[in-house]
Image 1 (cartoon, rainbow, N blue to C red):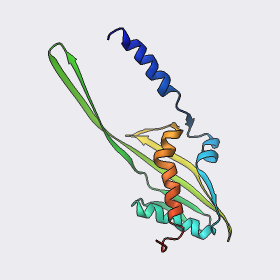
Image 2: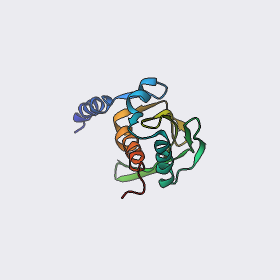
Image 3: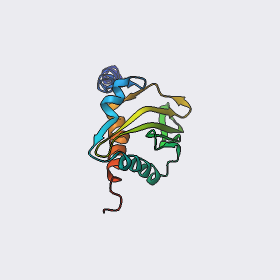
Image 4: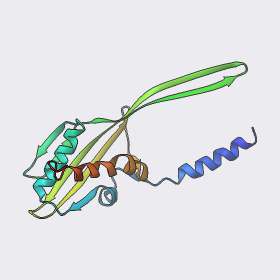
Length: 161
């Protein structure tokens, strides 16, 4: 088993190292993953964004309908716990900890009476108090950004169920 450890380590690094990462200050990140246009009036889109965050109980620190700008508070994305056990001789030792991922969205909603574009213009994330500088795009899109835009869409006609 000792001889397999280096091989398994290399395989794990190759598999996880291939995840697509992008810098949070890369404009392409926002254009490719955080911008979506809809056949909805701009006011409907603005209210849908507000409604989606209200449903998640996320406060807005800025809400400017005239300029189409919304900024959320820094809010929890994930609370996690780590737990590790290791053996030294006949003694098993355990260690663990807790952490929290928080994030904040800066969103522009632009358009006219027929169409709108919702664009996250800035995204900030923290692991505990350490600010992230890049993200694993597929993971964060599948777990946060994709569902967020789906939530906006679900609020286009909130009275229709």
